[in-house]
Length: 627
Image (cartoon, rainbow, N blue to C red; front, top):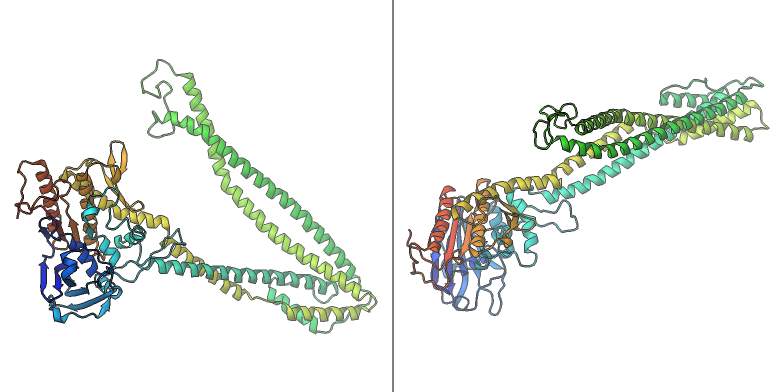
């Protein structure tokens, strides 16, 4: 998107045109107070801004419509905006037309057919600004911002007060909310964040909710599965005590359930005076005692492992401090195969200057031996750490198994005892019938989650975990920061290179655009300093112009959706006062004249180097005798 013409329509229908060359450096010269700076305001108004800030005077007194003709890829766009009502400076009315061979419309053809918001959206879509919303990956409290043509236009303008400012690098940066909008949208225009970043943040929140639900469902299924297993084991012990099933339960839970169901529904003969009930109760009591003893032993082992891990970590932390201090001595003269000097080293060499000593220094030898000993001890601890963690995990798994077995045995013991008390005065056959009915009732109400259901729930949980990890990786703020810094590297490199051509101060160091502070940092003799800490108006203007030229070269080369227009208002103000007339030419040997020529020649060189993909418009009061 480049500017072909600006047109002003008088209240009586007359039209004043200002034509521009696309893909070239355009210079508008004229004396002060002739309306050159109005070009920026009219351009911003014709790209969808509701407010028109023009000084009260001939333009506001006579103009009824402001219009611009834009060249797009393969087509043109004609935009016209009626002047705000008297005593007003805002309007949302607009006219928009597209066509391959459009020209500036006549006065009687002007008619409102859209509004400023639609104007921005349609023009933005034509240059590639897709639907997007950006939200900070770290600060979710701030509302997502959608980048539009208005934000892109901020990158295309440098007003008279902008270009010479040491505090503001971007157009309207000091206005409320503009700085925040620039910080939020610049990563999108640079291509550091995807167009659907905010949508993916919403997807991540939904994916996390789905993961929490899947984890809850799987955990409930596991609890129900474990509880069912404990109840089945208890029922099997009870049925075995009454002679209804054999002592050894099937390994498969489904088979156990079927066997218990058959025992509960099939009649069985009971031998009078069968003593197996008391024997089984005693055996269960012994099994519970054995499991408790085993759990106490495992708890002690686990505690010892935890103490060992804590002690090893404490020793490692304490030992690394003297090891690192000793190692820093050997870094002064390290061996090529042993940078820390733990296995090599010449004790007859001075560690400070590298000169050969008449005899080995015993202090150096003792220090080297201490370093070697500490390093070996730390290596041993690092070697034992993984097996210790594995042992802790194994103990944890075994504790969980034994607790499950103990719970099943205790439940069976409780059921046998309760059943015995309830049927104490009944015959053994009646006791068996009572147990059969109880087992049948418990089996009918027992919640059963099949292995296939657990597998399905586990797969759903794993799928949700993968989805969350993938979205977190895409929205990782560290990776987003890395992508942004990668894209700012060529911008800073261009600024540093061109600073030599303009002979700016601190041109020997590198330059870096900082989007957190919205300023340029330049390397100086005392370290990186922001633009506000660099003196002279010539430097402020120079670095302003170079930064925006570098940004636009990046936008062009990476096909980013920003208008291929850069408008600079009075970049020579640091060298020439505003009262120089359009015909005034300073002496050829004047240093300011040379600096100004370097600036214009560099702009022209950059524009030509981009093969017509960038249009630069300079509005200035100076008129150099240079074609």
